[in-house]
Length: 327
Ligand code: AVJ
Figure 1 (cartoon, rainbow, N blue to C red):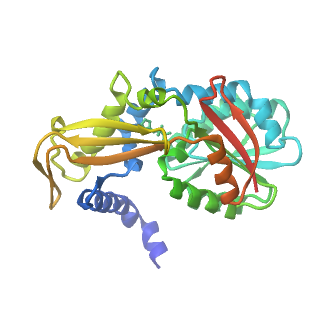
Figure 2 (cartoon, helix red, strand yellow):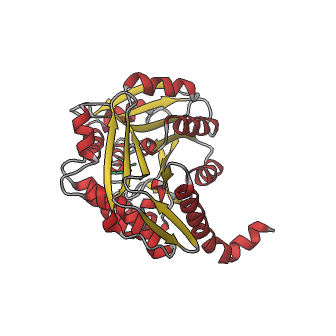
Figure 3 (spheres, rainbow, N blue to C red):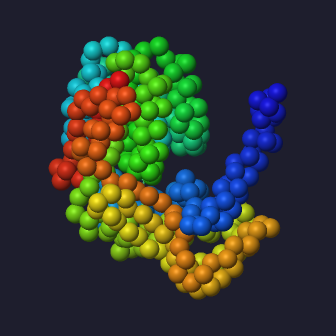
């Protein structure tokens, strides 16, 4: 069967690369050229994203950290940590620096729960598991490697307890409004009555503050975008001359869409494998959306996707919200 062939390994390792190539060519042949921000995160991309998270203009990470440092008790209340045994399942856990504060609080409160972090990177999960074992030895941890829904399905098979999902960091922002609604619907369909979710949303705020976060004075966001062209050169036999592209960022306060583009500085042709892509001067590649929300839009999304809003936790500036919803 196909499943068996995949398990042998060669298809499994070839497949993502072909998918990457197909997506890149399809995106660059579209009338509005575009690339998918999910491909930002190779080794260099991870390093650049770390730099973004630590830079002064990018307020998001600090804001959500503030919530977990100062409001873990409120979050624990919101998910009814003392009501019954539950599984805390985190989508895209990474190194879980923010979640750590909640985990610590819950273990101190002797809450009856397990932590099931999901990530696409098996490496980061191994690091996370050993760090948690060192710092919270009594915490029961079960890591699951895979993409969101595949791994969530696995988590649901492993668990007969009440479930609490975590989807933090404004990762939902990388989806369009329609995609995020579909995503939340799919989540609620995987849950049952009484299950909950904590989702991190970046809020609409002074447009200049938002634009600055994605147009940082140190140029990390620009490098982060350009890095995808470098990755295409390295992995897909591309020949982008990165000096011929410039990062351009927009924020529309009406829709809340903050968008990244790379603009071609001249007429040029780029080859990627056997394909040739033509750019005219000033033509753009749409790279990423980082969607910002108003509170009423977040509530509306909860209802439309099969959840009820329970509680909103804010940072001190009210830049960011971790919203708790219940099925
Ligand atoms: C990881 C999706 C939350 O959109 O704010 C940061 C990625 N892109 N700077 C975001 C990102 C440019 C980030 N998320």
